[in-house]
Image 1 (tube, helix red, strand yellow):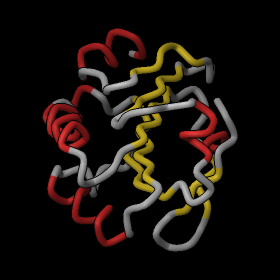
Image 2: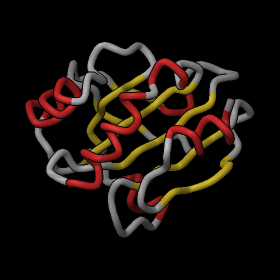
Image 3: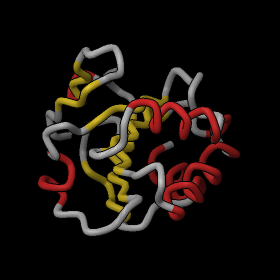
Image 4: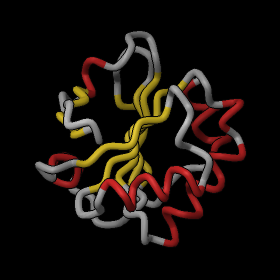
Length: 132
């Protein structure tokens, strides 16, 4: 798991490497205006009761925190303890993963090992099968 530093809305930093140990992590790089990202959020939101054991980090580069908050609220992901919305102000995720499209997802197991990347998003079923 890369030690990415991502900005939270309260101006503190989320260190990806410091997320709870023995918890699977899915890093999603998204843009609130992206239709594919909106579809991904809809699919995941419907299955969050089955995805509680996975920490989700939704990161974006260009969007404002107002846009990020509106996205999180619209898809009912804003009040979940295992879902974190952050800004990648250093553009670290696209650089690290060499991504070309959004939503881009990187899934890490409980041992912090990369299991699979999804250049165009993943279904909740795929994530459950890989990480649960």
